[in-house]
Length: 92
Image (cartoon, rainbow, N blue to C red; front, side, top):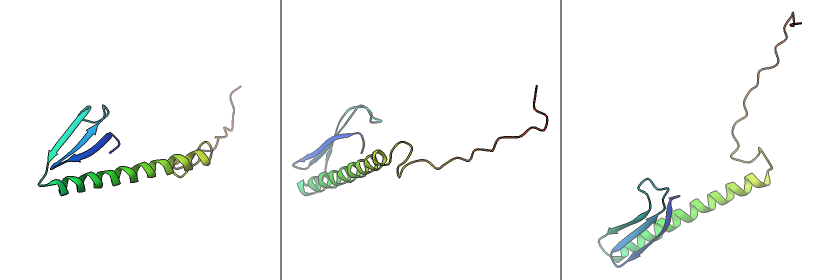
């Protein structure tokens, strides 16, 4: 869904245009379906999924920018750093 530029329907066809980052490269996919109602439903379903993904991305970006550097809901888990070793006879 991240590579979809636009989508739509015309009569009993549903189409999706993808960008150059898509596995297939840039271009359009036209799919013939049973009737215009199916084409419209596919179009609306894809639009809803794209809007939901966009909203999720926007919320993640906003939470990261509000929490400052290194923070945010999507920050990675902290790593454990071993404490400094104390050598009984330090080098000269």
